[in-house]
Image (cartoon, rainbow, N blue to C red; front, side, top):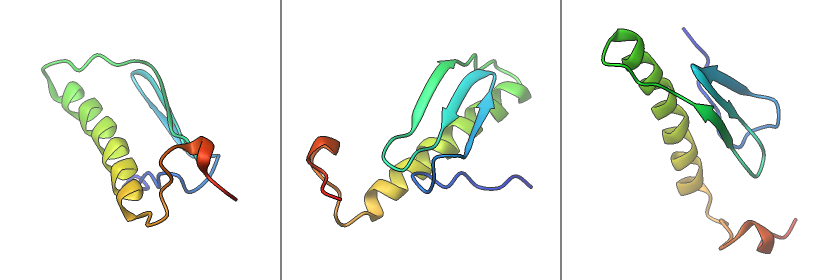
Length: 76
């Protein structure tokens, strides 16, 4: 079983699906490249990987009670 994507937890995690790279960061998650979601089992798996990463990011953002209006306004 694959380790879950822990959004915003570190600057080292990431994964690739198709030609799409998803890179984790403390303040930013970067999604670069392209992804073909074909109408087959491989397409389903690719779509689910992307969905898990986006869902993890959304969940992390919703849990952050101190979420700034903009990253430029964030105080450390």
